[in-house]
Image 1 (cartoon, protein in one colour):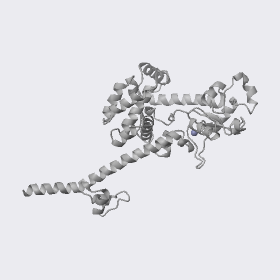
Image 2 (cartoon, helix red, strand yellow):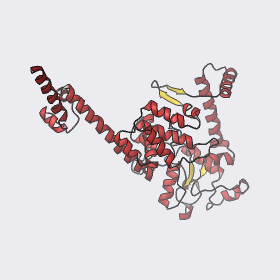
Image 3 (cartoon, protein in one colour):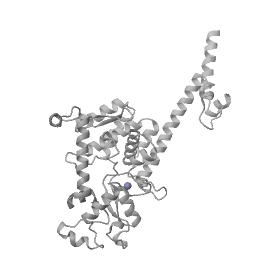
Image 4 (cartoon, protein in one colour):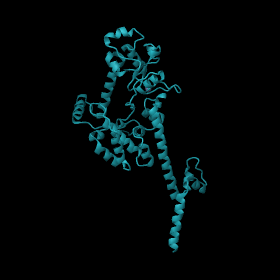
Length: 375
Ligand SMILES: [Zn+2]
């Protein structure tokens, strides 16, 4: 009888202990919850109390993540990141909010899924869908949307909803299996590149290559007398970059320079035969090749947008447009001092400020910054 009573008393004590609200428990132990509990305060808690507090902290972390996702969704919808020196939501989360690239990619993917399928928020809130699963589903949908040949295939809302429902409450491994079972090209999922920082100076890169590429790699190694794939990759990349920069900055034919620096909302292309005539006309929309070269040299192939409040410069070097600082429609001229390189996000922002309507840009991550596995 005494044993039963002792056991019952122990159970009740535990129940009371677990039922304490944070503040009650804090008061009991004479600690404050105003800030984070310090090591000494945590040490005063019993094991069960510590578990209760830890569980509470985990709930707070999940709630905070959801709040962050909601904020990021609004930033994405408004493209507010372009008001500062960020070229994409991903760029903002990495450089602005200081998340790692993989953490940022996960959050951005989850935000995009929430944007397309609002009920995802409820699933994340209830714990039925983790951030990782949401990001995996979004990457799967993006992969399904990219048809061979680069065209976009629309994934119906019902298909997305059914896929999300199937993944609810499942582990990461299970979600992976479900997505693979629905992938039209399973190898595409497996072929995503994986990058992992292994030391301060080295990153591990895993890629899936086909037989033809393997043979090319072997032959290239023989011809270049390079012993490692890493060295061959480095040499090849250096060659490509040097060649491209030489073409764009010094001796590019007009069509190649235009290909890189696409005309912006205020600039259109003109046939080469009319170039000399157009180049002399500062009211023309056409950007002469010599101007493009000069802009590239000045910008060093980087977006020239600077945030008004910090003067920080955008770091994007992808999809650069030549933009008229003062649009032609507002009296601006096609002259070097009125031209600048802008990334897509800042070109669109400049057009909005100038009141010029240009087609909405599909949200994309900066391919220079985004790890390939999240593209
Ligand atoms: Zn930019």
